Each structure stands twice: as C-alpha cells, then as structure tokens.
Length: 204
Image (cartoon, rainbow, N blue to C red; front, side):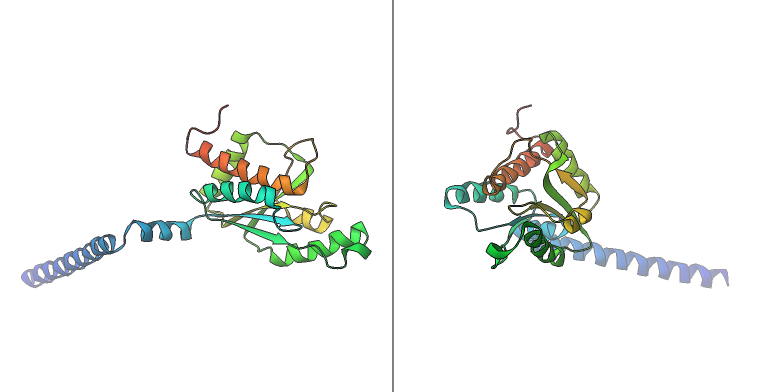
C-alpha cells in the first residue's frame, strides 16, 4: 500500500515537472520569436495613453511643425494622439452659452468612463513642471488607461464639461491664443516625460 502511494506521488511529481518544463520552454521560444519592435508594441498596448483634445480649427501652419515635433517626442514615452473638435458650423448665429453647450455635447460624447480628464482653465491650479511630471507618473503607476488634456474653445468650456473633469490646470495667469496653447501643452508634456526619466532637458 505504501509502495503504491509513493509510486503515484512520483508519477504526479514527474507530470508537474514536465508541465513546468513545457511552459518554461514556451516562454523561451516566445522571447526568441518576438523581436524588439514586437515587444515594444506589446508594451505600448499596456501603457497609459495621452490625448490632446482641442476645440477649434486645425493647427496653424506656423505652429504645426512645433506641435508635431513635441508630440512625436512624447510618443517615445507614451502613446499620444491629438483630436481636434471643429466648432459648430452655425457658430456665427450662436450666443456664447449656446456655442459652449454645442461643444460640450461633442466632448462629453467622446469621453469614456475610464478617462482622466484634465481641462486647461485659467481659473485652475498652476503646476510646476516637476509637479506635472509627478502627476503623469502617478497616473501611470495607478494603471490609468487614458489622460486627456483638453483645451476649450474661444469662450471656454461649458459647466457640464467642467463637472466631469478630474483636474483644472492653469498654464499661466497670462492669456494665450488657443493655437499657441497647443504648442505649449505638447512641449510641457514632453518636458514632464524627460523629468520622469531623469533626462537632460529640464533645468530646475
């Protein structure tokens, strides 16, 4: 009887060992098959994504190159994407409140439950570059799916959108044209990424 139990134990151990060896071999083979680009793409799928949303026209030519330059640099750290929401076609006949209401409908329809919305608002809180870096790093560590940085239209954002945001961020007490804010935003996010990685770009 004891011999039978011992024999079965040995067989079970052998089966477990074979299974472990098979799994280990499979992982080893997958690591060989997947090249660096494939691994990078897999990593990007798991990464938090950064979105830049803006209400208005397409990037002005004199700013487009700079916006695209810093956006490309950000993409080395996180997946990133711009989305431009065109103003209402009948904007000329709308009041400011009607304009903001129309824009808010588009924005809220595009917003997902898991998104972290940061609106750029002159009445918001000002962050230093290191504070912005800490914020982005914290959200990444929390496995946040998306961070959306939103630049409102010419008259700001409707209250319905402000109620949905997690943070209000003021770039400055100065007022900038919305197109220039796009360039500043892209550069500041890139700067924050270099701070997170301790790279030589930001000088405190």
